[in-house]
Length: 189
Image 1 (cartoon, rainbow, N blue to C red):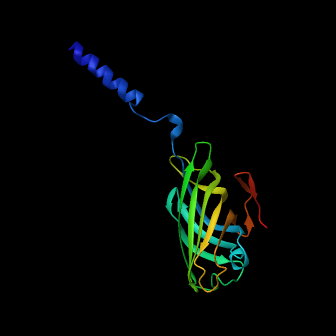
Image 2 (image 1 turned 90 degrees about the vertical axis):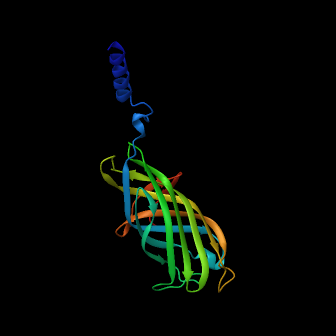
């Protein structure tokens, strides 16, 4: 009986201590983002320098972007204007600390259908803040993505190739939310 009592105490201790559990501060909070983002690209020459755009997408925590729209500010030879001239895809990871700080990554690809064959790929690091918790989904605010872009293809115009850097700002309605990312302030132009 004494051995059974000792075994019971050990089992209880393991249950209370959480044998193999993670530290208390490693809880993952939940964050979602939806709405418009404005991308400002630098670098490239000729047609490859005309790639600034606004896009609308949503994602919760991590996974594929649900992209509902994309429009380039400048009409150029690399991407057509109007409906159904591009297809878009992407993924994001939103990791939210217990303090509400959001970090993660974002990758997005825009393929031209008119003219066909051009592809713009953006890869960057995302920062922002969230009100999310382990039991509620918070909204991302002050979202900023800083990274690099690459345009491949050269279809229709040989200047439709290039590389550079970009800054993407989360916008609310018609005004850009001010935030910071990797030492760069994101403010509406």
